[in-house]
Image (cartoon, rainbow, N blue to C red):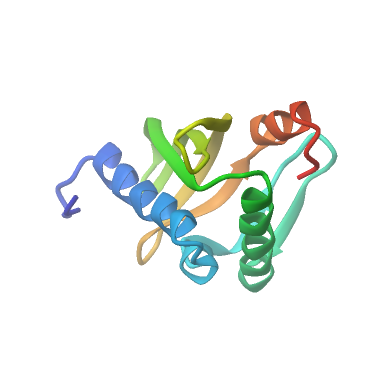
Length: 142
């Protein structure tokens, strides 16, 4: 999808998450981390934390390894909604399905993101409670 200055917020965020899911599918932690702000925020049930981009890149490497260990061969993401909260600030809700090599479902969850547009759209914050619950239900510690 080509994104122009006249694209809708939903078009822009959809194109962003196409690149985001593709980076995961390619196991490209560097590309994925570049889609985040310099410092990413992670509110969670066990406490809030933040990660600078380099630490997040390392976290992505660990996360991609974890997915492989769980049998994930293909991540699939679907943008459920995108809304501009303020100029250059958007809220997005994604649905993820992690598939094995035969196309079987390994896990599924929803994520909520807050994105900010500077030179491009980047994730500022994510709420991953649903993903943590999905892996916990499989006795897989994320």
